[in-house]
Length: 125
Image (cartoon, rainbow, N blue to C red):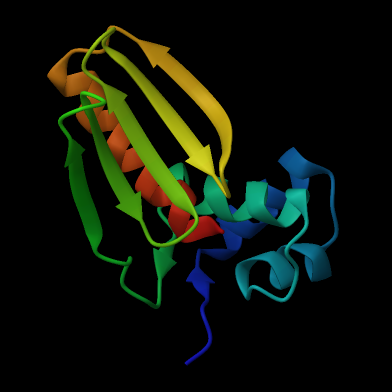
């Protein structure tokens, strides 16, 4: 089964307006027919902010602990990792090996919110 994100017609209109794009572009993004930066932004917004429903389950999150490095890594499939550094309390988001975001001093609720956001991002790729 091919991946797809379902959203309402109102949400599709909102995506067209916000991203200043055409209906075919929104369709390509939501049906994973395009993998451009714009398509990934459309998918992320649809899942994160517009109540989009994915027709697949997210990959299992695997957590590893490196005691020597004092890190905890959450693996969201092969491409996305969230690394918590216990030495300085920083959280790093990596996509395809490149750091995309760094947060300092998150409490548990904020870290859990970041985990949910990273999972949504991983689903949108």
